[in-house]
Every structure is written in C-alpha cells, then in structure tokens.
Length: 356
Image (cartoon, rainbow, N blue to C red; front, side, top):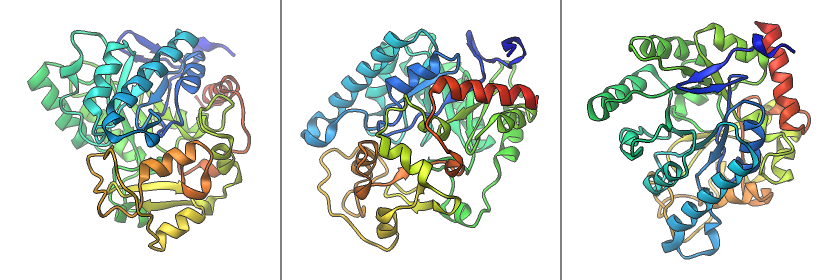
C-alpha cells in the first residue's frame, strides 16, 4: 500500500496518518496499552482519564490524588511504548477536571481532548506549552461559543475540533428525546455546518468527525464532506491491545443490532450501551443504593441517582458484566473478531484508499 496516497490529519506540527484519532473510552477501557499500540501505527492514541485510578476501595478524600497518579503513570507507560502521538481525553464534567488537565500538561502529552461540557477555560492551563487543545462539540454553535471565549480571553483558537454525532457510544450530547425519536441532526449535516464555522477563521481549525464511523468507506465519506480526519472508538475495543477485560470485548462480538440501546444515565445524559440483564433492570426502575464517597461527576446527584455509574463502568472494564453495562457505538454489533491494532489500522487504511 502506498502510504503517500493516504490523507494526513495535520494538527499544527502533528502529522497523523492515517487520519484517525482513537476515541478515549472510560472507565479504564483505553489506557496505555491501547493508546501506545494505536500511536505506533501513525494514528493518535488516546488515554481516557475518567475514573482512571482504582478509587473504589479507598476513602473519598484520596479520589483526586489517585486519579492524578494513575493518569501520570499511564501517560508515562504509553510514552515508554511508543514515540507516536498520545492524547488524553478529559471530560469537563469531572470534578477533578483541573487536576487531570494540569497532570496532562506536566507530562507534555501531545493533545488534550475535552468534551462533556464546554472547556471554556482550558487554555489557561497550558503554561506556554505547545499541547494541542481539541474540544468535542455536537453543533456549530458550540464551536463558535468556544472560539469566541478562547479568542477573547486567551488569544487562542482550538487546534482542532471533534464533532461527535448522535451515533456515538457512551454519553451523548443530545437530548434523550431526540436520540430515542431519531430526530437529532445527522453527523453529515453537522459536519458541514462546523466546517463552515471553522473555515471562517484565518487560522486553520481541522474538523474531525466522530460517532458511528466504522470502516474506511465511512472515513472517506466524511473527508469528502470537509472533515480532515475521524475519531473512532468502537472498532478499537475489539483489539488485542484494548485495556478492557475480555468479557467486555466479547459483549461486542455477542451483540446484534437490536442489542444496541439507549439508557438514561444518572449524570443527566442519554447513553448508548449494549443491552444486558443489568440494563433491563435499570430500565425497569431497579435501583442500587450506594454511598458516594467521591462525587466524580459534577452533574451527578448521588442522593437521587438510581445507581453509581462510576462503579458500573469500573465493573464493566474489569469484566463483571452482571453488575454493569458496556458502552458502545451504534455499529458495535458489526464487530466480528478480536484483532491486533496494527491489522485493524491496515484494514481501515486499505478501505480508505480504495474509497478515495
């Protein structure tokens, strides 16, 4: 395969080729092993910071410190395994958001990807370092708000922007009603609108499409719509190097199209998951009483939440699927085998070049 014919995603002085960013998947699904394996292919590997520390068995007072230490260790581990581009996904909704951002900056990651809220003050933590800042948005309006705030307050624009559509896995930046009734704008339309906003600035802001992107044909489709690259998460779950338990990966392989469903998350957002007994129980109103020691998410109200989502996601990553659910994108059921990251990226690249 002639790699000279493969498009390059340029984010400042970072060249990502093939133009794929691996989506950050928490809790503990994408850590150093996956991120490094992805970075070794020329794509950007991403460590998810949400709940990255083994916080469950410790006092709540140690929550922030445990996550900070765990993130630092994972970044250093990934760096020891790869010289390719490594990013960290840090959700604005995390109560230890600032601590995690500062840690990522101290460790000189290549990029900080930030969504699940508006990262309006993210540039203030850079300390003059050339770390790429990439907000995650679900609309052109959101990008415009971030650009205006960053330009006015920090004289900076995003180095790139990820546009996450309604077909993504995990928590979604859309109303529960629009997802369930299939009335949310489709990613193709949102991409065109975001590209128009991004192109209105004199500084290039690469637009990256995300949500439901499964193969090289999908990548080519969004490049033709004006995106410079894509973010993919679901496909990287079914790899040898993914940090999640084999049971987590097997849930993807065992799923059918009808198993991909939407739940109302305790954090106030819809979430796309693979159906299970646990999912059926919570849909039917079953609650699991818990004593919250740490309040990891700003938007969670532990006193009224039906269950602890942090604990559920930690259980999932550890393979305990009886007391958890597996986040997944809309096309997760199409995964049929566990493959090495290198082989997956080679397949996606071949499909992309054929489609272009």
